[in-house]
Image 1 (cartoon, protein in one colour):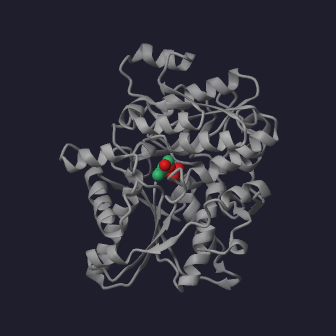
Image 2 (image 1 turned 90 degrees about the vertical axis):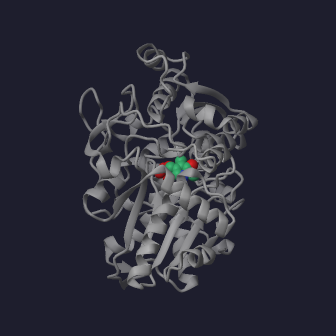
Image 3 (image 1 turned 180 degrees about the horizontal axis):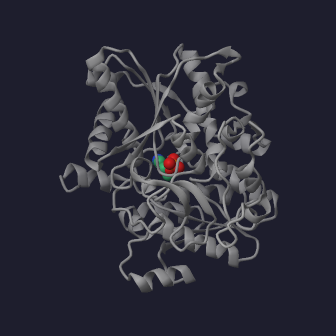
Length: 434
Ligand SMILES: *Cc1c(COP(=O)(O)O)cnc(C)c1O
């Protein structure tokens, strides 16, 4: 753990240091690059500014946000000795435990600042989409603490798979609707075309954006994909950087699961800056870290998608984003890692992957739960189905070290716990999962 004065007071904006900047977001009608004013119709104005900021590498964390981070930060950096032993690997495995806050995932790191900026700017209502419900839960909590009304569209299939997540959101006072729903035009169109549509993050985003753009003083918020979200998540990597230093180690490999890229970017970007700048604390740094994004085999945008301009949602309400994508009408299989069922990747990560700073692997669902179970039985923490993908990629790398005898230092992000995902574990333990 870090002491209070060691906590990061600024977020790291990798866009400022990137050699090839992410391509601009485009207005779908005019194909012109969007400016911050355009984005501020949907998002908080400060988030819109952060989204497009390619010049300031460090952005101050507002005092009120710091205060709330202190409720649960810093989060522990843990060496997984028991997992190492079970695998018989010479690798040193560390994980950053983002599951320890009461909401149970990293999402609250961005929910707090997004609600803070909305409140500052006079917004009264926030809306969003959520898959498995971690983002919705984090936003509902943050909105309540800042006195904002919150409406959440939750992917219908996830709502059925994880009923307790909607209970959590409603406990924090949010109104929760399954998507696609009959309450928006986008939802009606989707249901008319496909009455049994299970919903996806794409359908839920369409509905939330429609609500935000048709309701006064209502802003849309997003838990992943956008650059300002990864920016807020860099508290993870900035803390980990100091904690690894205290442990006297430096990572050879950094791994996180990948939905839209926020927990991956949050952990990876502060370390990637050493590589981009070729230095660390003003000392030359030539070490090359192997950055690995672990995505589900059933939603493989990084390993099998195309780099092109695409919409962020099913109905085509969002700006056009330059990203690795499976196409905005892609319907992902109903895997339990609801947070990874998204068709596209954030624009920063997309550019970094294209430029060879990182790589991606895809993980079959059963392999992810095998790894999650091993982690639970060794480290005593039941990981979120999303996080199981990072663990599976870690297990793969740690097993390679058995063959080569290398004592690699592997750092992965435990993005959340799985205590509200026990129906998924039940299905796995009963042999019902595919
Ligand atoms: C939302 C979520 C993810 C995926 O989102 P990213 O933006 O890619 O981080 C991963 N793990 C957990 C626990 C989540 O809630």
